[in-house]
Length: 140
Image 1 (cartoon, rainbow, N blue to C red):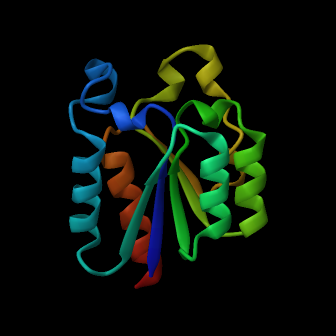
Image 2 (image 1 turned 30 degrees about the vertical axis):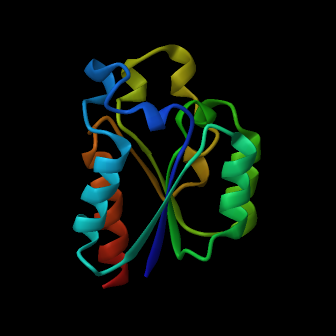
């Protein structure tokens, strides 16, 4: 099984930005944790971009079996990401480090959640780990 983990805008700043919300782990350390979590049972590829079109292009190009996506602010604004995910027809899980429902009202709307297998929000880096676990369980 091959998994693609996509991270959107500003997630490259993890470990530096708003640590009280996002924690102090860097994106690189989260990626390392996820490779260990997959424990050789899945190949995990990572992609991060601050540009919506680059994210759409990666979704179009991937040969992954499934996608884990933290689209960041694009979660709440991007019909293009939604359409790309629908176009490729791959199962995906939407993840968020923070509990978006305990934050500003504009973060409560997602253009992805109704077409996702599920949404994991508010568990910090474990949100990603839970998504990995789900796909590994489905593949066993």
